[in-house]
Structure formats: structure tokens, C-alpha cells
Image (cartoon, rainbow, N blue to C red; front, side):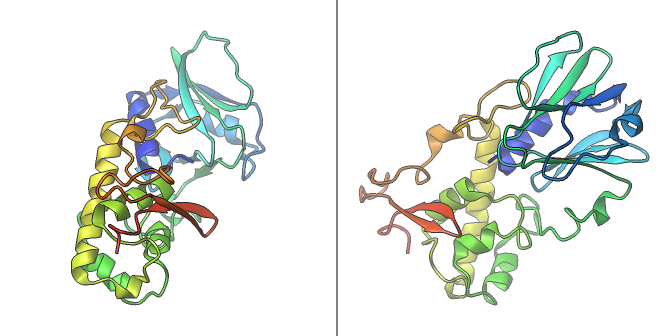
Amino acid sequence: MPELPEVETTRRAISQFEGKVIESSKVNNPNLRWKVDKNFESIINNFKINDITRRAKYIIFNSDNYSILLHLGMSGSLRILNRASNHFKKHDHVEFIFEDKKIIYNDPRRFGSIHLTKNIKSHFLINKLGIEPLEKKFNGSYLFSICSKSRAPIKSLIMNQKNVVGVGNIYACESLFEAKINPLKESSLLSEHECTSLAKCIKKILKNAIKVGGTTLKDFYSADGSAGYFKFKLKAYGRENEGCLVCDEKIIKTVQNQRATFYCNNCQI
């Protein structure tokens, strides 16, 4: 599933369309997680994009009157083609057509979504989201204030979008490994020092992943067709029974909330 670095990488790849006009759109299949608005094509005609932003794992096309809210879901991706190209892939659901190019939204599993809204901040997918992890106000003090009130495992807490957005499974595992904190540890047992360390590690891991285009494990490619190379930097995720890069103990795999968790039982306390 595309996580924050992959979504940010995609946003940057399509930032070339800021200031451009979506002359028309084509909905090939409206049946995503939520059905695409039946009036989508008519509303999007001559839609001038003021800017393209990201909130959590959502990409947002902003205009004067509407915003397009796009989520890649489990398997979604965007790709850029020349307008004249007739190359069609299975699961190409929506096309945004510009003067000389087009952006195509593809989603094999259809867990993604595309919404139109006049007020992005009040949209039901946005209005309850937590703090952005790369903002200054996400720090040790903030994290400690949340952890001190929670008995949830720390990995579950940092993956809860109401606490902090965009820290998906891969980067939660990697951040906790970097901070030497056991993902199963009860949040309320973390010291303020540990919370400060973890907040710094989350920022570091996410920034490093963005620099190399995210993580391509199966089918993620950015809109410009480039793969993400952070998979070559993974120290915990996906390394079950391999030697820890710090102490050489075998990396353990367990399951938390139906997600695979990888950690070193020796290094991560």
C-alpha cells in the first residue's frame, strides 16, 4: 500500500500540472471504494489547478471552486502520458486530460477513491486526521502527551491516523527499529526521552524515503514511471529470520492488527 513517502513522491511527480487546466476527464469505471460522483466529468471540464497538495496519504488538486481529493488505496497509482497516447491498461479508471498530456488513475483492487468537494477541510476523510509527522509540532512532547494516556502498543499508536498521519506499516517498523523501541511495548511505558527519539526517527525515516522515491515492493511506481529505492535501505521490514544489522540476532516477525511487524528482540527494548 502506498504510504506517505510514496504519495509525496507521486505528488511531486505531478506538480508539473500546477497552473494547468484539466480540459476534460473520462471516468471509465466509477466503482472505486466510493463511487465517483456522477457529475464528475461535467464539473471537471476546464478545471484550472491552482496547486497540488498532500494531506496524509491524500493528493489534493485545488481550484477556485472545487478540490479533487484522491487516495491511492491499496494498489492505486497515477501515470503521465502524452494526450495522443491510446495506451490503455486494465483497471485504468479515471483520466484527467490536459492540453498535451494526461494523468491516468489505475487501481486494480479499487480500494482507492476520488472525491469532489467545495470545502476540503470539512470533508469526512480529512476533518478528523491527526498531525502531519514532518511538521515542527510533531515532536517528542506531543508524542509523549499522547503515549502517556494510551495502553495501546506503540506501533499501533503511531499508525493511528488520529494521532499522526501517514506513518504506515513499513515506516513504523523502520522508525521503531531506528529508535530501538519494541513495537509491542505499551505506549504509556515510554519515557519522554524515548518519545523524543521516536519522533526524530519517524521524521528521519520518512525524509530519507522521500529522497529515494519511496519503497517499491510489488507494484508501486511514481507517476513519472520511476521506482522507489528505499527497499534497499530497509533494516527491519521484510527481514524475518535474517541477522539484525546491529547485533546479528534474527529479526522476528509477528502480527499486530492484521499487519506484519518486524523487529529485533535484542536491540529494541
